[in-house]
Image (cartoon, rainbow, N blue to C red):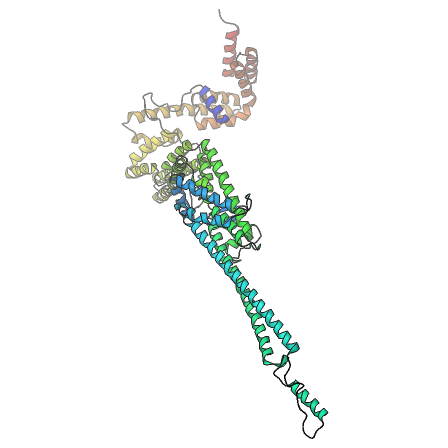
Amino acid sequence: MKILTFIISLAASLPLFSQVYTPPAAPTTQPQQPPTDTGPAQKPKESSSPLGQEIPMLDPSAETVTVGGVTIPLGDNRLLKARFEKYLNQPAESDAEAKAYRETIAKILQTISPLRDKAPNLKEAFLLLPGASSYPGDANLCSSLAEAVYVALLAKKDGNQLKELNQSIETEKNAIIREADWAARNDRDTNIGNSQPAAGGNSGQGGGRANNAAAANPGAGTSSLKYKETLRRITEIEALKKTNIIRTEAQTIQTKTQYQVTMVQWFAQRRYEHVLMAARFYNQIWKDGDSTLRIDKNSDVSKLFAQSLGISPTIASLDSLSNEAIREVDKYIEAFNYLLAQNEVHSASQRLMEAYALGEYLSPVATLPIEKKRRVALYVRDLHELYGALQARDYVRGKTLSDQLKITAKDFPSSKVDSLISGYTLASDLAIEDAKAQLLARNSEKAEEKIKKAAEIWPTNPKLQEFRTLVSNSGAIVTARNDFDRLLSEGNYREIAKRQYEFAPAIQGDATREDAFKQIMQNLMVIESALGKAGEFSRVGQNYSAWEQLADIREQFPDDPKLGRELELLAPKVADFTLALDKARQFESRNPKQTGSALTWFLKARSIYPQSQQAEKGIQRLLDEILPEG
């Protein structure tokens, strides 16, 4: 910027010189200057957006939000953007009903919090859920939470009943075992010891055989059917007991899984306050320390935790991430309010978009005043319209919108938009100029190719209409006249002289064009004459004479390129002479003027080239000041 200011001030301080062609003094429309950047326009990169996605949009391109190292998918990008625009035009949820709802949620969290002064009260917190579910913004999620808690309590009660049943079965089994043990020890056959001796036999030996036979017979003790039935009943009781235990565990796991599915669903929906309430109810219902989420290892939720944190998801991790998300939303809204106060609407809109994407149902987002949201809404509307204009290659409209956005938001990143518009418009203009040149060269195929390229780059280029008019009026005289006007506006006087025999009959009868043509030809003749004389001087080794000849004519025609090139070729050969002249003029132009130093350098220049008219004029000028005639 400092360099540009210096160049402008330097140009303003230089004296005005005559040109090869000086337009008439009458007020006329000045010819448009050609662009300074004549290099070939770079081919734009193919991209879904004309900006190559370089300008930050109010649009999470990855469709995710990262909280505490966990990446949460946001779903359909277009749907999120539509919901965000709807949010920007909704009034704040700050009425009495909304305030009462948030107070109820806070009271529930406090009632069942393990950090409260009293012990957590599950029943009191449970009774508050129906009142919270009556608020429309709750979407009946508190009612769903109450139902999940109720089902969990019923399942837990059923599990307790199964445990009581197992205890009663265990009592029955122990009684049966005691009875069987007593029978095994004491039960005998009633005939033992009462048998009579057989006739004609040895009473002692016969009696012994009778007792042994009676004792070996089934029907009493461990050989009885009753004892065997007792063993079968004990086995049956054990199987029933194990079945009840398995059923209790399966029912507990099933109930926990159903409860956890609801929590994960609310976390994915970014209902973090409901996740916190569900987590605290969970810890009060099941106090067994089992908090692992029973979800499929291949599911998206499991991958989020495993790939981001390298751990299995738990109830505590959902609770922690929900608290972290709530804190992040508070920080986003704080940053939004500060940026908006500084009129940095672009950055403020991004922070609000992030806050909304992360926690659209949280209080800081829901209670944001409509006045602040409308400022962002208007900015976002113009921003999206700008992207649409650039995609449609309507660079005139794009430039207008870019200028408006610069006023609306002082932090709007306009450099890429402006450079894109400048690059594409320049490429289109150059293609049109090339098409004109090809048309004049009678190369219609090349001209058609170039004009198609110009239309593809910038379909609404106003110069396309000019080209259409040129085609419709493409007669030789009209074409030559148009070329003369174009070259005149571009300052390409050498080309006019080169094609003088083509332009002379075309402009005949037009006083303005004829005057310009004559002036150009006369001045170029003067320049060519000076160039011829300088060439003769240079040919015989008088480079100082040649340079001074061209330098004098250069003061009259500073914009002639051929004259400038010849001076550049002579500059190394006369460097000592030109250096002395420059030094003398510098000392002469200083304030206060250093006359002695200036005179010394002019004398040195004359010593280098004694016939120098410029050195002689400088010496005489200084002598007139030192020794005035009076």
